Each structure stands twice: as structure tokens, then as C-alpha cells.
Image 1 (tube, one colour):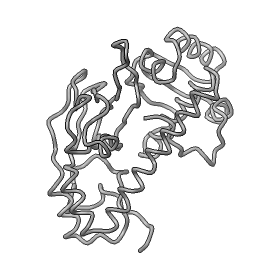
Image 2 (image 1 turned 30 degrees about the vertical axis):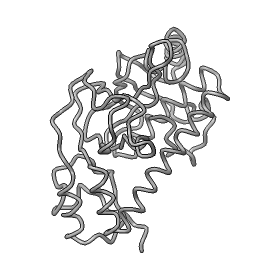
Image 3 (image 1 turned 120 degrees about the vertical axis):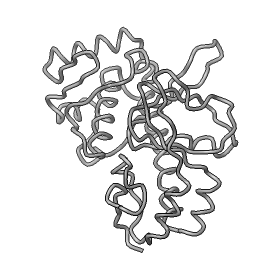
Image 4 (image 1 turned 60 degrees about the vertical axis):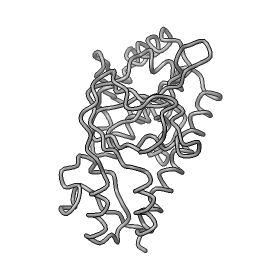
Length: 251
């Protein structure tokens, strides 16, 4: 089967009003198959800022796709704090880490008003048996999540504070770019504290690095709005090449 992909936003028979124009499926799906996929997807009410989509320990029933907005996932620590495990942006899936144990190992909280699609996993599995290309796409997504986790572990273990923040900003840039948005200008919906938590840095260190990046002319930050002036230099600081620019190192 061809490896070409078709964008859901260009399909008129299914998910025609979906904003996930970069959530792609392998070419070869018939219109009947697309209608079957559309039938099982539930459009939930918007999740308000600070509201939980699911909580740690909740039974696993569905995976979720972010249609608009953003969500952070975090796990509780032994001292009652939280450890941020990821940030999920428009067009990304979450909940896959609950498949193995049949319950959610983390809590998912909206960072802003967020629209999501709920995909019941049992029905998705059943549909995957009928549509092999859909099943293969699910395997690709799961593989990417494993790679992302490995990448984040390497980020925390091998890089200094400057490199960690540069890699994080580059990751967000690449993720927006892959969905057709600007890679140079975007809003960071997560707080400095959440960013520091995720990167294993004190919030003061994150703030100091942002100030250093601004003073060097690398970027401009106005509250949550980020404008990157030199992507090439950001790649150099993050220790990555342009060829690895589509690597997702967070969330």
C-alpha cells in the first residue's frame, strides 16, 4: 500500500469540520471506511482552563485528540507535588500510555480552553482490524511516543540548562510548523514553572535563560508570546541539525 497520506481536513465525507488538518491517515481508505472512523469519534464539550480531561488512576476507555488549545500531563510525586510529563498541542494525541495497565498513569489538565475529540479505544481497535492502514498508523503514533520519551530522558541527562530550554523551544517550533503554523512565532500556553518542572530546572533558571536569549537577540518574549529571530542559532544551541528538525522532544 502506498505510503502517501491524506489530510483529514480535505476529506468531505468524514470529519469535514475537524481542525486537525495535519492528523493524517495512510492513503487508500475508501469513503465507507472514513465514515466508519468518523462515526466512532466523539466531539466533547470544550475543556476549560484548569479542568481535568482525566485523572491519574482513572480507568482507560479512550484516547484523545486535541482539536484546539493545549493540555499538560503530570504525575504526582511522593511528596505530594506534581511532575510534568508532557505538553500536548493542537493535532496531537494523548492517553496512549494507559493502554498497557488499563488505567491512566497521569492527570491531563487543560492549559487554556481546549477542544478535544474522544476516540473509544475498543471501537478503534475493532476498526483497525477492518482497516489495516488505520492500525499501522496507530502503531506509528505509539512508536513516536516511545521515541519522544527516550528523547526527553536524553535531554535531561546530557544537556545543560541553556541547551534544555533551546531544545524545548525548538520542539514547540517544529510541532507548530508540522501543522502549518509559523515556526518562528507562537504562544506558550504553559507557565514558566511548568516548563521548569518538565525540563528539570528551577523556575528562576528558566526565567534567567529567557532573559539571556532575549539579550543575545535570539528571540523576543512578551508575556506568553514568543518570536524566534534566529532558528539556525536555536538549532545550534539545542545541539540538533536541520535534518532532525521534525523530532518531537516534548509532550
